Image (cartoon, rainbow, N blue to C red; front, side, top):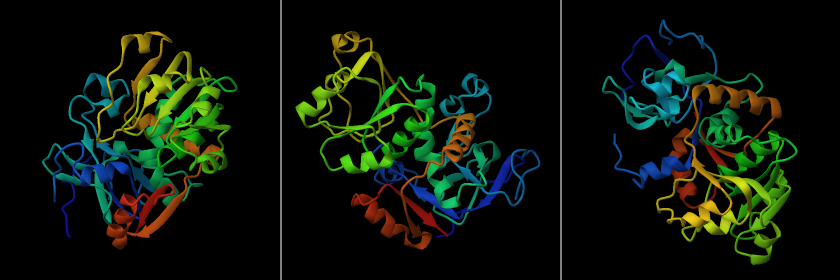
Length: 316
């Protein structure tokens, strides 16, 4: 199918797509779990890229660049008209179609040079899952040698979370709802593992974690179950967006340990650049399986079947 690119302007950069990561958010969009979906060179102002550079774009392609949050460096929280890389529209009216293609055109301020030491197929995974886990961990005051971070969900997001938390100097505990991910969690670098369905396993880590990064949870999730793992003044950080709703919370559950509960959405351009440099420095590597771009339907079928270990990448 031939789709039109964004209308050209002097803030545009055009890229040939060599690799594109598949994310859970793609499947949520295809299945309309979150909302109804919209179905089907370098401009003179560009300063951060030159013709021939390898570059990548995140799940966000632009912001208004004028609201208070944008001016404060929080463009991912733009209140004036942020543009997502797919299922969105540019201010000029053009649709954004994402990276399942051979070309992409968009705002240069949301396109980032790939470190020379990072391969393109590896880099493709960092622009969504990578920054989604790196940014909140970096903001959450992790103290090397003292912080103990639990990663809920050892999957596409969680396996990044483990590696970033380790890179930041934390002790890391993997958390999943059965024993199936124990060996994988330890191979990724976890210092311990919690089977959330086992009372003894949960009790062993009672009041021992300083942070929990929730990248996945089952519909029977209850706040108090996981708050029990946190120390006083602990952090519960959510980046999981399931199709079901989180349950309500008792005020006493929240007050009993002065837990800080907050969410995080992708990351700002500054955080993306910082993440790429950090990942290159620490040699953080996702576990990937590569498909030809022409085999995208097979890749999506395999994704729905739960086969990723842990990121799928499409390659032209």
